[in-house]
Amino acid sequence: MSFYLIVGIAALGGLLFGYDTGVISGALLFIRTDFALSAGMQGLVAGIALAGAAVGAAFAGGLSDRFGRRKVIFFTGLIFILGSLVAALAPEVTTLLLGRLLVGIGIGVASMLTPLYLAETAPARSRGALVSLNQLAITVGILVSYFIGYLFAQHGQWRWMLALGAVPGVILSVGMLTLPETPRWLAGHGRMAEAGAVLRRLRGSGDIEAELGELRTDILREGGLPSWRELLSPTVRLPLIIGVGLAIFQQITGINTVIYFAPTIFQAAGLSSASAAILATAGVGVVNVAMTLVAIRLIDSVGRRTLLLTGLLGMAACLLLLGLGFAIGAASGALGWITALSLAAYVGFFAIGLGPVFWLLISEIFPLRLRGRAMGIATIANWGFNLLVTVTFLELINIFGRPGTFLLYAILTVAAFIFTRALVPETKGRSLEQIEADLHSRG
Image 1 (cartoon, helix red, strand yellow):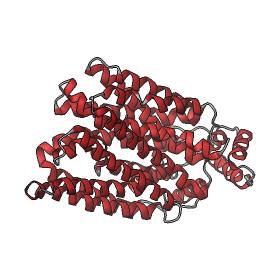
Image 2 (cartoon, rainbow, N blue to C red):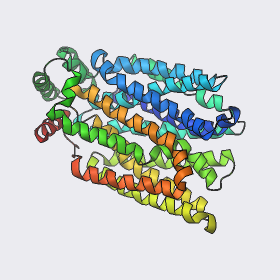
Image 3 (spheres, rainbow, N blue to C red):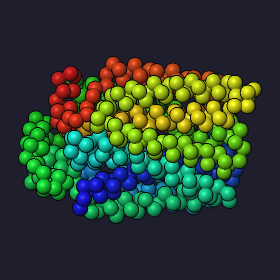
């Protein structure tokens, strides 16, 4: 099997992640009417999947360390199928919430294990681009969800929007049956011969002895199965601070207010019809995909840190412009244009920096021995703050207004820039074992 086919199947986890997070933005325009939802209940319908994602992430690390990345991703596809169908067939809001909770569990597992699987199978020289294919799959999934939302918006068919999430779930589960376990997981469980066989399958005719040697050295240094207590050790502290810090900043800088509420924002800016608001949101989704492709091209040459810093500066500027647009737009008649351009540019800067770089870095910086569990903690933080931002967004607008809310996100983005300058290392072109050794010495 071609390595790129392996990557493509594994990245379907990212596609599901993107589709099921993005589809609710269009569906919510009709669900809120059919079920007569208040602003608080709208936030709950959007946010319940995030609570599920935090639960999924909490268990994904330990399960993948014990049973393997491949098996857990396979069962994740089944969870996506079940959750999508339950939500689509919901007769009332309680069942809808249950379905979205199941989908959220799948999202939480996929968001952690897909980049981990890709990082542990990719060669060092192209790991950044290959792992970032997961972020590309997420953006494609979001974009597809917007177009699906537009197609079904004319007749308010939100159930079809949610049901179609089962299709990539089927493909993911079937595809994972054909994929190998990662060589690093196999080596960590004493199955070095199998690890060598998988590396030969992945690398083709290339020499794998140096890579196997690094794996053996790493396994000898790490010892047996880890305990949760080791996450508190001084040598893990720095990568854990970096991973959890970036997880929090990825959310509190406001990206998912755009993903979940972009049609609502566009309607507030003057696009009155649901179809027009969803179509404008799809335009933002196109920018997201295009700039993620740019990031994939640059991430192994320009580097993770440079893209992250550049993206954060651009995001802060766009959030300031967006807040200014809502402050003056009603009087000038320019609100629709300012909103569309600011949101598109904001998403573009996110897509070259904090979007792909966060998921890549947390798959690189943690020790092999604790990688699954440490990534799980970072992912829990990510989804927990995603939930916090989602359920508070509409309330913040009620309290501070749109200008004040986007100004707050801009200030938090500047804080993320300062954090990155101070702590985040450059990891391009280095093996996972080299990154681990350097962070160990810094810690």
